[in-house]
Length: 356
Image (cartoon, rainbow, N blue to C red; front, side, top):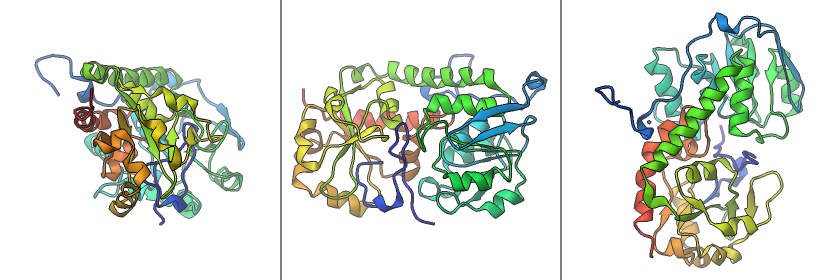
């Protein structure tokens, strides 16, 4: 299976595997006291109850077609990113999920998914190939009641095959274009728990806000989240892109210059070119990631890149841990609490290098 990387999105347009040279692209306490934000568990809902009676059948429109779900699903299959986590948080562990090898740990699963399911004593979902080569045979064998893919890149051709297996919920507008809160609302509706979407969304916002409250030193610290598609290129994620939204929700401020760059249509990002690197001179911090050590070395060797002030003084947040890079790129009920404790020390280290 080819490597895949966290998505550049209009809240999520996929980066293709061809961008393999991308450099910068792409949670207990005792005694009854309130847990810290970074320690709060992911919001989860109990298994389906009688409160869902009368919700079904439910019909959900998408850009690729209409899905009518006749009764509350018991066997759920997910494609793309984020749907698995939200389904688990709603008490429905999928029977099958699209695999994501690049972001998985030694367990072979995205760690927050593995932790949530095993901690609950559940059965880990069957993993299957997705992307351009969806394993339809395995999905068919799983006998799903519904296929959830509201944050994915499935094509019309793929959708037409999937809907013959089970009602399939695709994206409402463009591939990889569903906002994180909108995705939660769609999945909650499909699983017969529409009222619980608001609880999940508010919990995520509170976890991030509580974490930000522990870091008053982040106030007025500006940042840019950058990426490349190879040597000589430079792109900047816009404020509404999910990985940027996660950082800003932790109390940092997007460098105002980012809003002056023209968005590359449908990506929530702007390709500005390495020749414009100095436009990021007032960014206190640079956030990015590297696909591998070799790519990092190539990118950092570029003179114009190295002369970005934040880069020059080492005020860069760039994890080499693929699961973390993946988790910090997507906002959902499981990733946020998993990421917070890991993110804050990295940011603290970079903030300490700011020249005031």
